[in-house]
Image (cartoon, rainbow, N blue to C red; front, side, top):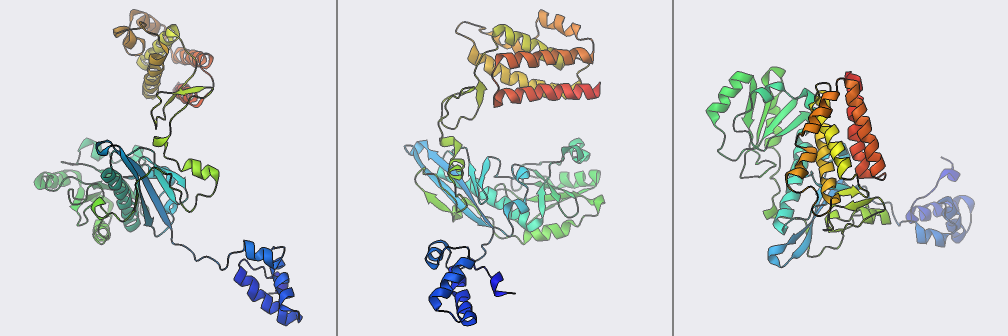
Length: 432
């Protein structure tokens, strides 16, 4: 390598390079330091002293930090924060995809706010509960690390036998897949002594599945529950090897052996990877933030942590009655099939919430309120009979879409409802 190709990145590197320059060029040491500093993209040696690290930092082992804030009403609203550092064998997103983490026990309400930090947006009711939640997440990560299993999310390929003939006494079960083989693995964690051994043996004979108890105390509630794993024996999967990996796992972390950081305040914790103002805002627990209205939305209530919002504007009582009529007809129509039902059911639930905020005192009291989106009236029946084809249902949904766009400003809560309508229309067009 030519000496001109050397570009130090640390102050120690600049000094080493200066010694080489002094020897090779026969110049003074101070001049060599200036030249070496410029090779490091610094204006001068003084600039290098101010900006370059002394030495290259050692490569750190992958880790993550889990944080939960808590408030104990029984202790005069004493509050605090629990944070646990977990060293990992690989980066968290190599261990489990971000989209799959919400299926992992303990991670359901944890939000990734930095590359090394997850925060729970719900305020725990006390310190013990907060620690227990964090420990459950830690146990789940250890389980994935040692077994190679990942959360199973393909519901269309879920073993049909488990729906037809459910495992007896199943409790706190989770579904997993072996990344290497693609094998589905059932993990069951019933309370100790609860499963009927003979009943489960008969189930295994009927289904061809093998279910075995492991020696590791488990993820859900160690020492109160037992951990069982089960696979279809006809697959040829080596269940004994998996059980050996589980049994070799270290003692699970529990709140009674807490090793994390406990702070008696709600000051926002920032991880080492939180560098910018945006990182600081992202790290705030939403459960501690008081919601405020915007130009297009308002919160459902003004309690700290309220994340649900609705649009400003009003559909009006008559508009809600028309919307309810269309939704009920679409859900009942023989042409709409089941693809529409789930989306329309979610839509009417949210629209009924909006209606409750929009009506004034004395309007739609008692049964009349529930008639709008849930009860069938004579007018609803007459409208339903007019939908004599798939095209009629689609036209009615397009009309509903237009009514919503006219009544409410463009905002995230409205777009969520419009997506439900648009997806229903798309599925009906494909089915038709």
